[in-house]
Every structure is written in structure tokens, then in C-alpha cells.
Image (cartoon, rainbow over all chains, first blue to last red; front, side, top):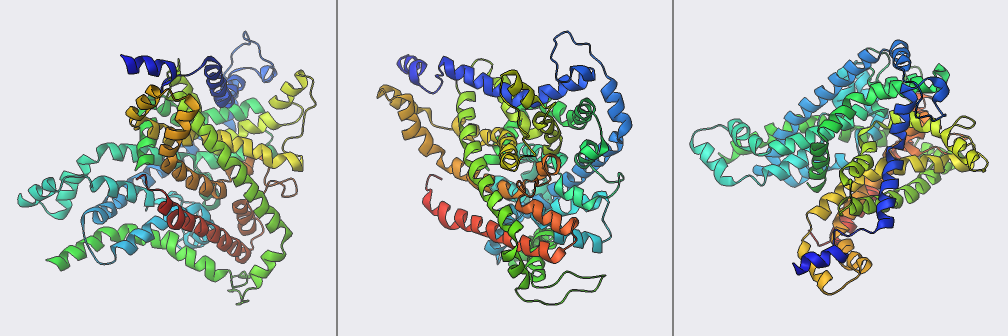
Length: 279
Length: 290
């Protein structure tokens, strides 16, 4: 009772009225660009900067945006690239994370250091050399080309290593006594124990690669492999002379799948980012 | 038996290590290597020219401008977004009505692609019809050419960066706050400690590892995140808002001077190595909370 009363007054949960207002105002400012995009996209052009609660609604900007850029193709490219990267990351990081968590071998410290190096030197920094590599492999302007540099993820390896290291050794031993091979132990004991970490990692990876821009810009040339972000940059460029409301409509088309997923799985998203952050 | 165990370990590591070698380790080495050569001309490999590329860099006024810009960009956006994210986390963690909605609002910029939201921000900043100038003029102030004025272009980019990053960092603080031991706070309440005192003596020290984790990530991002430049300013006017990675991109893919781009990348790698040293050699020894 006492502590409850105290924390009511000045404990963790306390927040004063001016602060409440500030929190709300900041929230409003933070969501404002998105609100504005919705406003501009759903109202006729003359209302873009003229706010009127009773302005008529329209879908014409979405129709024009859809006609002016191959959004369906961009979306397909983004989905394929994101999925490709995620699947490969999950496989590679699981194998490597397991070896680093539960096996002893010479040079483990060095391997760990080499892996962790990618946390600092991410593929974005090495666009010049990676472009040359991809050109040598003749993978420029392909889905695989966009995905390759990201398939081994230091972050994923580290995250799974930390998780696998907490799996009770007794479970591992029991599976071995029953005659499971190394990969069977990994698949039947370790992977199920890390289910929530896999979900967390997947959400972080998807939102990263759905939004990634610089490397896809460098490595794609045509709409055959261009993801939504690169398509948006071309679509929104002043040279292409597209109207604001149409750009806003296009932007909403581009972000809608991820935004919808985010709104539906809000809790999982936030918790995933938290989990990934704590390690 | 032990040998097969070792072999298995290496086999498990092989795919990931091969990919890391191909797209991280070997490129790092060849970047350093190429910065001592000329750019290849018409398919012929360039000549070894020693440290000439680095001399060019040191004489390149644009390079210094870009580095200076990047320095300011990091110096302003990193502390500002960290401070803001901490305030956000504390608010969202308190007994605030509608906090789920507010948390959602704070976090939304994180899930939106930088490139798409930059299009919306471009409209905010545009002179004449832009939203910010409309608002200023309605209040009786003079509108500014936010992205066209050399003095305002970089600060305008900074504002957008802070908006994009703060909600992301908030999540890490929120995670840390929620896993904190409440008994310390109860003790503070019994001692009648004020809110600021409680924050200074309990919350801030306990959050130190989180702050350092965010700090490193924010610093890396300050050198890595240039997507919005492509939409908002393209580094202009006259390189007033250019940043190092964007300048590397320009040299490699607009001016086709790959050797110069490699030299600039070497410098960026050096900066990142300094950050790594700062993190592992310095910070990790100072923080004992974990």
C-alpha cells in the first residue's frame, strides 16, 4: 500500500500534465508526415495545402501513380529479394551460430572477431568493391545480386549464438543418446528453443531489407530487379515531373504492405526490436 | 572423435564464413589495395601510384568539406536523437493515457523506408508551396529556401535524420527500462528523492550500457545512412550537405573514378575502425554493469 501510494506521487509511473501534453505533441509531430501523406493522397490536388475537414475524397491519385510506375513489378521484386535474403540468412546464421555456441575448435576467437567485423563494416560501405564482384559474377540487375552481400549476417549469427548458448546441455545430451546426428540435434533441440528469436530476427531483417536503398540502387538497372525503394526514388525525382499528391499516393502504395503488417503485428514488432537490441 | 568434431564445426561455419569473406573481408582488403592504384582506363588495370590518391584527397577541398559536414552531422544528430529517444522511452514507460498510440507514433518512422518518407519531407521543405513555409508565412514570418540555402540544407537533413532515428533508439531504452529492478525506485521513493535525483542517481547509471550500445549504432549510422540525400539535396547546394558515403557513391558511380572512391572508402573504413577501437578497447572496459 505504502509503496503504491509513493509511486503514485513521484515513482516510476508519475507524469505531470505539461509533460503529458508534450508527449502527445511530440507524438503528433512524429506521425505528421504520414498523416500528411494520407491527406494529400486521398484529396483532390487543390486541397493538398488547404485543410478542410469536408474536402471531398478521391482515389484518382492512386490510379495515376499506379499507371505511371510499375508498382506491381517493384513490389514483386521487393518481396522476392526480402524473402531470398531472409531464408538464406536463417540457414547460414543458424549453422554458424550453433558452431560458435556449442562446439569447441581451434581459432574460435578469431572466427568470432571476423564475424563481428561485419557489424562495423556493413555492405553499404563497400558498394564499390561489391559492385565489381557482382559484375564479375554477371549478377548485376538480378534478385540474387541485390541479396548476396547480405546473406551472411553478423547480427543474426551473434543473436542465435547467444540464444543457443542458453539451451540446457541436458537436452542436447539426451538427443544424442537417442542417436540423433549433429544436424538432427540442431534441428530438433536448438531450433525449436529459439523460435521467438527467429521471429524477432525475421521482423528486423524484413523491415531492414524492405527499406534498403543504396545497394539496390547501385546494383539494379531495370525494372526487372528494381525494388520499391529504388522505384520510389525514380518516381519521386523532380525530373520526372510528378505531382505531390501522386507522389504521396505512390509512397503510400510502397509502404502499405509493411505498414499494414506493422499495425497488425505492432506488439511483435516492438518486442522483436527490443529482443534484438538486448541480445 | 575430437577431429571429426572440429571438422563438423568448420563445415557448419563454412557457408557463412565464405559469404562474409566474399562480401566483407576481401572487399576491405581490395579497397585498401586499390587506393594505391590509378583507376582502370578502358578495361586496362591502372598503374601503381603509391600514396598519390591520398595526396589528392588531402588537397581536395570537397573532401574536407564533406568530412566536416559529416562530423557536424554526427555531432548534432547523435546526441539529439539519443536524448529525444530517452525522453520518449521514459514517457511511454510512464502512466500516460493513450501510451500505446503515442508509442506507435514514435516508432512508425522506423518501419517506413527513408527514401519514401524523404519524398514527403521534400514537400515540407519546398519553398513557395511547402508546408513549413506556408505555416511560417501564416504566422507572419518569412519563408526560407530550406534545401537550397547552403546554411540551411545540412540542418534540414539533420532534422529529418533525428525524426527517423529517435523512435528506433527509444525501443532499446524502453526494453532496458522495462527490465529494471523496481525495488531501487521504491527505495528512492521512501527516501523522498525527487524525480530528477532518481533519474540522475538510478535511471541514468543503470541505462549506461544501453546508452553506449545506442551511441555506437548511432555513430555508425551517421556515416552509413545517406538515402535521404538522394531525394532531398543530392549533397548540394555546392556540396553544402554532402556526406562521406554519398561522396563515395558520386565518385564511383557518377564520375566513374573508382580508385578515388576506393581511397575515400579506405578513409571511411579508418573512421569505422576508430569507432570499433573506441567501443571494444575503451568503452567495454569502462562499463562493468553487464
